[in-house]
Image 1 (cartoon, one colour):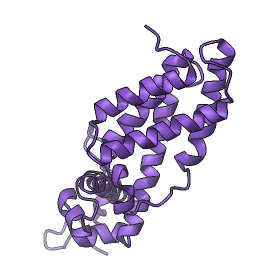
Image 2 (cartoon, one colour):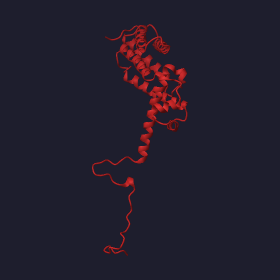
Image 3 (spheres, one colour):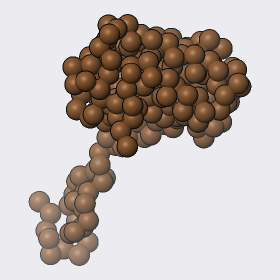
Length: 224
């Protein structure tokens, strides 16, 4: 048995705590566990890659994965670690874009704002969305897939409901069916987008013409 008073006796070994078991100094929060840091790093990389994809494909719809990696500030291998192909990456971006557009429509208060104002807000949300995702102006070139939550599915019913509300309130002409008017407004939007993509109109002019045409189509006027 070791004598604690013997100067030649080696002290008994103590277990060295693992780095993550060492308590943080008083008043300083303990660092997150390694697994949480790895998840946070991965999330930052994914966000950077998706944002770079949005910007780069908006400028060059045929840009490569190498171009996107360079814009994101990561390696090509990192991009492929999160997205197995360019098609998978674009599909992920489209899902994000679809969710953002749905949120924009929620913010526009389509079911509560005065109908003419709500229609203007709806159209404005669309143009702001295209400003953020200009690659959608070149959807054929960029080979944009349909998202699971597709705006082509959820926008027409919301727009029809808005038009019908305006007709009931007396703000829009009730002579034509609301779903027909909603489809015509969507057609106006697509025409305006095509004109911008062809370089025939600026975004601002197309937005102005689209709003005026949609309001005239419904027989309404913008609120002062």
